[in-house]
Length: 127
Image 1 (tube, rainbow, N blue to C red):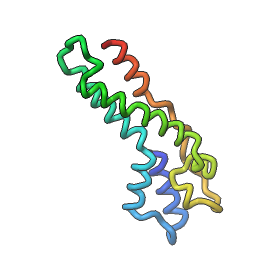
Image 2: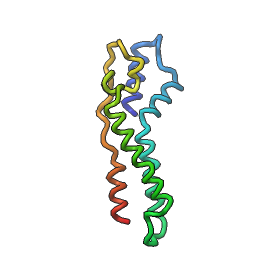
Image 3: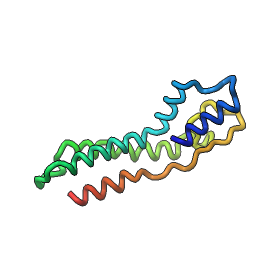
Image 4: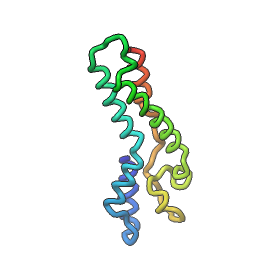
């Protein structure tokens, strides 16, 4: 999402007449950060699960089930955003719809695999 912010700033500096307003920039940054936001929720659910007293039936707790429900969304969004049409158009830019037909170099880099998947696996094995 920091690359998305840099792309928006660069675009606004290059094209003052068609700059991205603040509310649209917030939407673009949040849309680009969905995987990270869901990962934060998953971590919170896992920490909540680990803070509960262990009774031997830890896979049935609400926090663990919620973390399991969020995990497929994180993985599918990661692969969707990694190879989506916006990636091909503008090198991963969150403003690809604005830059079509323009000579714009994106600051975006390749999205890393979500670490929450490994953390979830570690927590599951510890339960």
